[in-house]
Amino acid sequence: MLPQDRLRQITDRFEYLEAQLNAGPAGDKIAAISREYAELKPVVEQIAAYDQLCEGRAEAEAMLSDPEMAGLAGEELDRIKAALPGAEHALQLALLPRDAADARPAMIEIRPGTGGDEAALFAGDLLRMYTRYCEGRGWRLEIVDLQESDLGGIKEVTARIEGENVFARLKYESGVHRVQRVPETESGGRIHTSAATVAVLPEAEEVDIDIPATDIRIDTMRASGAGGQHVNTTDSAVRITHIPSGIVVTSSEKSQHRNREIAMQVLRARLYDMERQKAADAMAADRKAQVGSGDRSERIRTYNFPQGRMTDHRINLTLYKLDQVMAGDLDEVIDALTADAQARMLAEMSG
Image (cartoon, rainbow, N blue to C red):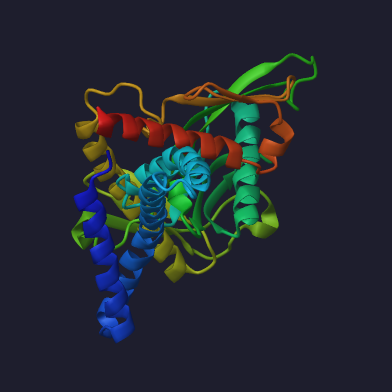
């Protein structure tokens, strides 16, 4: 059964916020009210759709006693009974607790794992895959720091992604991505296995993470990278070391001021992610297997090029459309991961 008291509270709150917006709230409150209103609107729409079906069922049941209307009422009742389970499930999903970070921009970090030059090339392929996915969704991807390998692969990359529900869509990408293919660097035609790690972090705001100036050391240095014409000749790159945690972040854009700003964004994101991870570990101490646990050492996906196959090991999903996946067609796997996570949450709440 759906919690009727809670549904009424949500609807009352939504109507209150709507009245506040119509009355024209003070400037400093309008952003918070608009945000909460936008979050509640899809929930209230699901409540209204469910309530309408329930009311329709009651009316149709009352009409069954009328001999002239019984036939029509029976048909309407059958239609409503068929639609109710779907409406109830949709409402249950809408009522699930939201991750407060879902709507935030994200930082994505990609690094080669085992596999040498081939792993660095695969890391570059993953960056292109995510770049194309972002383009398809109308998101903005900005490279924060990029260190290329001699063969055109990636030693390390950090990018910031901004758009609608970025973290909600990308948070299940964290982990070890494994590739099986004949490397470009291999003349013998043997299939090699190599890997790259992906970390997706929600962007933190200054109010989330307070970083005292005494906790950081800021160094400027000359930017370096593959390709002579791309190397800065001024000391504009910035490296920030967070002394308590030992975290080091760099940014190598042309503007030193912008680099400092970007590096602080990345540092806040990493520290915020550490705090979220601590909280998640405490809550999930008794749950060993969890999609989106954020364990960076977990092998989450295999990209098998000879068979054109991508397998996500967490949900046993295999797609035989690797070319499309590598071209940024990730919605099918992300939708499946999201649905699995929602099903787990529903099971926990009903259990």
